[in-house]
Length: 179
Image 1 (tube, rainbow, N blue to C red):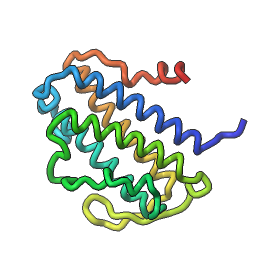
Image 2 (spheres, rainbow, N blue to C red):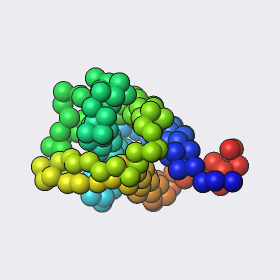
Image 3 (cartoon, one colour):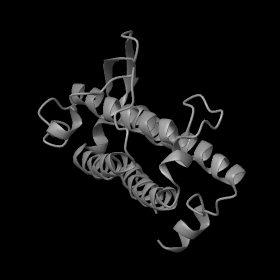
Image 4 (cartoon, one colour):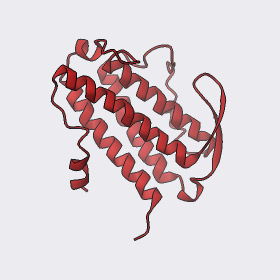
């Protein structure tokens, strides 16, 4: 059986959506105060980490426009929130974060469905968060999107462990068994 890299990215998108949905379900039982409590992470709190992940995902999807400027998926107006900034949270409320997370997960899956695997080695230029011009290949940039989220979900998992909150959204074996 041949290894299908496009299917691998689609599997990652499916897994990512499921894990995010499960994580937000766990986080929904916490009070707003608990989600915003400083946990000693780079972004302060669970709320801060969630905002950071969303801002990064929006920025990466916008960067991918260099690969497909006319993409209906990437030109979705929801990817251009008026208050997108590294200087402040995109959302102060959990409901707004949860809604954006669901939209972004759907857009990520749709983008990976739309973008042809024959172009994964294609390079593109983008500006990083401080304005430096950077170069990446499409496939590596797609991998980074998932690795970045996984990294921060791990931080949230660790914070929940310290808080004594039961969760299993990082249970990869359960995901594989459901395939």
